[in-house]
Image (cartoon, rainbow, N blue to C red):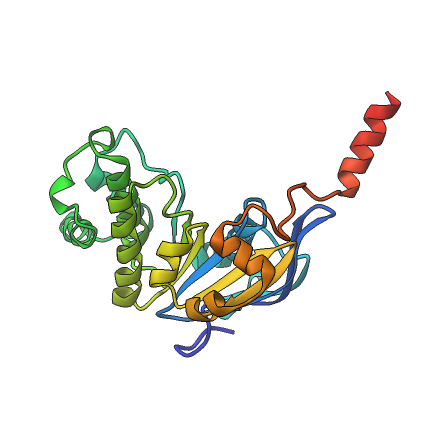
Length: 273
């Protein structure tokens, strides 16, 4: 089964995810449509990165079904899985740039790895994407010669150089100064519109995310707490949701990491030694 233009690019149906016998999330339902910016939000350790790993096929669902581009991720491995991943772009929190390459070669890297286009076409494509993030005239600079905010934009240009249908952002606003943060947020929105792709943000930043996203999914306590537009979530009276959105120190969000069978076995072994 393949996707049609009106189908969601990403679908989770009653999905449970975890590691070994420990389940991190249960009963997750979500959709990401073409042209949408979607935010996945939640506290530290709530399972946001686990969702991203499931979308890229790094983690299989314990229960339920995950479809990306209309294909069941549980059935993909080898070349079919690689083909699905090639339709994605990923912006890692660290940027993951090659420090021994200049800005141009960092962005050109996916083109050299995955296409056979000419050097002239590579030049035009890379400069076009650098222009889109405001860094065309920084193409010759080394990564050590640019700021952290500029490096994040270089990583974004690299993520979109293959013109993906789905872009995944892992904490795209982390560590940015207010100006760089605003620039990055607007780039995510404008590039999603230009490419007519779906963009999924794993983020903690409520203010910047709510300004650009179409839909928000909030996870916590091992489940999907809330979903809706920014306006719908802002108007909700849910205690957990309001604690997260307003950053309240007290509320239903637990301080302690949950008890698991793995810990109990470890503790029993330590106590008995």
